[in-house]
Image 1 (tube, rainbow, N blue to C red):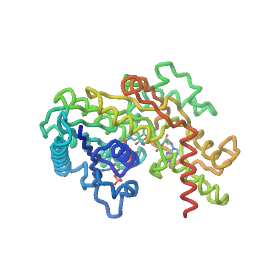
Image 2: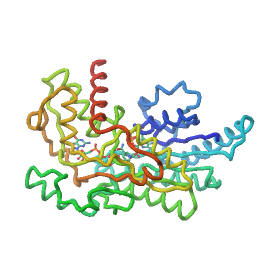
Image 3: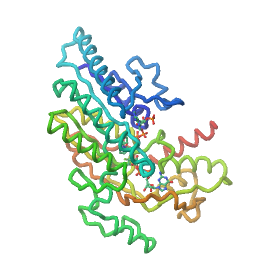
Image 4: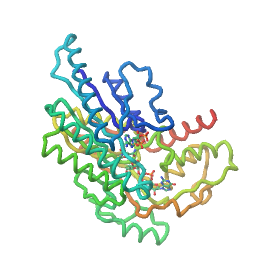
Amino acid sequence: MSKTALIFGVTGQDGSYLTEHLLGLGYHVIGVRRRTSVPNTGRVDHLAGEPLFKLVCGDVTDAASVSHVVWQAWQDAYMEWRRSLQIRPSEGPRLEVYNLAAQSHVKASFDEPLHTTQATYLGCLNVLEAIRRLDVRQEHVRFYQASSSEMFGAAFDTRARVIEECSEGAIHWKSMSLTERERYQDESTPFLPCSPYAIAKLAAHHAVRLYRDAYGLFACSGILHNHESERRGEEFVTRKITKYVARWARDKSIEPLRLGNLNASRDWGHAEDYVRAMHLMLQQEKGDDFVICTGETHTVREFLLAAFKAAGSEAENVESLPVVIDSSLYRPSEVPYLRGDCSKAKRVLGWKPEVPFEELVRRMVYSDMRATDRG
Ligand code: NAP
Ligand code: G4F
């Protein structure tokens, strides 16, 4: 079958990996980038010469531009299908729409709650509406929404207990008295969002379910736990750490690294693994929601130690590292503990993560070391 993909958020970490994955599968890929005063295409510039890839301009907060881009992509998918009919019979045109666009930084969402809501919730609604108004049968247009484990927030309201135990000293989340049900987040875990970003993502998540139930759209939400990579934005904690460690490995006299809460625990996987899951969700018989994760959790402190270790440090605790705690980097409200259970994705999609924690950290540190050496 001839397939065309439209990716909102193509210039981001996941957008670039998803584009590579889909091109590898023979898709025509249309990437939507927003107009910026300086270039924002660094993560996809290497794909510029690909015959099956093109970039178009659009902004998810602008309903007119979204509906034009979606309509044009559907025309492209239709024409592509007509052309492919001369070569092989086909069931019909197929357009897959991936909405990865968002203001994705949690701390920034406390400073820009309205902008975050517009990009992260209304952006998704604009795409859903544009698809609904195409008025084509659901097997022809399929939709993926980038939902987030951040929506779980303080699921089961573990927050108060975590904060209490933490303030008493060196108690790590993993030794917390979590019940078995609280230990992992899966598709049935309640949501208790703790940031404007998480609230916007949850609103979008519910909109996807509504459009699936009310209008019969083929729509999926991937509830993805944190995933990082060599292309991760530099303001997220993992990349901030690996970038610093790479510089420190070359010059031990640099200013110390300033970080916020080291006790938060995250389920960190590699983005390349997670984009495979996005694609698999749209190949099923019906739209559904899936948690995507590794099932392991590590504190920021553990990530920090692993990153320094990858650069040759033998430090066993953070106190002997060049790190200072900066309270201005704490969030007004924090998600203390994330650890997913992706049994459903394993069973239904046949998906599993390939990159373990230590390898993820090593890959990021080595990549930043190479970049540091290049200057
Ligand atoms: P990212 O690197 O921050 O990429 C976000 C993308 O959205 C960028 O291409 C950005 O464009 C684009 N964008 C922002 N506002 C836009 C607008 N108004 N119109 C059009 N495009 C806009 O994020 P990511 O890590 O790749 O994550 C992809 C998606 O998954 C996001 O929705 C994120 O919230 C969600 N998610 C991420 C994780 C994770 O751990 N990475 C986990 C769960 C969910 P610019 O390049 O111009 O800024
Ligand atoms: O790297 P982070 O900013 O990621 P966060 O907040 O978990 O959000 C990421 O994952 C979500 C999925 O769960 C996505 F939906 C979202 O788009 C994004 O990709 O922070 C991770 C942890 C937090 O607990 C934070 O308080 O690290 C802690 N932290 C400590 N010092 C810091 C810092 N975070 C940042 N960004 N910068 C620091 O200096």
